[in-house]
Image (cartoon, rainbow, N blue to C red; front, side, top):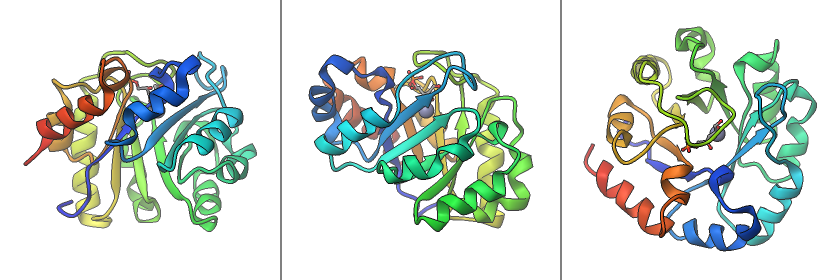
Length: 222
Ligand code: DX5
Ligand code: ZN
């Protein structure tokens, strides 16, 4: 994974929606992507936001948008999220019977497909079609809420996936989402992740751009 760039993706779930413009400015200088958590109150026990927020974001930032769908029946909405400006699109393995079909639909639109998996889903299941994916999103908390604790056994999943990718798809991007902070980010990168999604640690800081710089400093040389 030597040439895979480490990307920091602040999750706006932890931003202040009454000051979204201000909060985007607060990360825009240092962030690589903006992570957008879409929740439907069905696949996960929480409801967040959807197209109107993406539309608003498109007006105020040029950063690429990484959309994480935590919704049932993602097949009903893929193209709408792509039309709304998704640069990377994740749906959940557990949310559909048609993983291959949905990955194909995303890639046909020239958008990156990162398949998301819940903590209980073994990464080994992805082996057979790993080469078809641009990335995998490993959830390291139960999806639905920011500010939860990293589930320790998920670290092993990152390592297993990276070694499978070394063999089958060396440029596979591995995104990790949930409970990542200053104390565990180094281990997450060492395990093989290169897209680091963080909500609380970045937006909970009094200076989010600085927080990103400190995170980069912490993982420098890993
Ligand atoms: C959880 C979301 C995450 C969340 C991460 O379901 O997918 O993206 O916002 O937030 P923290 O970093 O606070 O765990
Ligand atoms: Zn997410």
